[in-house]
Image (cartoon, rainbow, N blue to C red):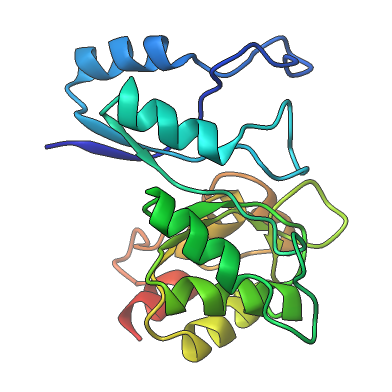
Length: 216
């Protein structure tokens, strides 16, 4: 069985992007998956204000997955600043528990433009670990920049979260994530798809931070 672990869709028309493109509909995705023999897909709803071209109800996604599109595996998208969450309380537990009981299999795609070790983010990670909900995230090279959880070159803040939340399954995503497969030549490398080779022409290995973190 082939499973697409990262896709987006919208059940109703939403505002197109600046280039005129928009999300595929569930029927378009269903036909595409039939062609390429993908049997199930993790659907990540658009609930975050970041990179938003129309939000999507998590509850609506769950109902559609149960009644109309059995190939959908629903995730819930949670912004760490929702409900009563703050730096001094754990307002995320009730929300993560609710969505898990509703039928969601994970959380994401988390796009909040906060640092990985921001107290709001840590509360969300703790709740996901508590209820065994894998979390899909998008990384940004910095704050106040597009969308995604922010980290420095080398992913030191993400590494700290891996040490704190040893039982949380993280699913990484974005150019700033993949670029760390090889050695960064400059901070600008984090803004695009990776070009740095891990295995050099002379056979020398130049790993980035990600392969090392995977092993650890």
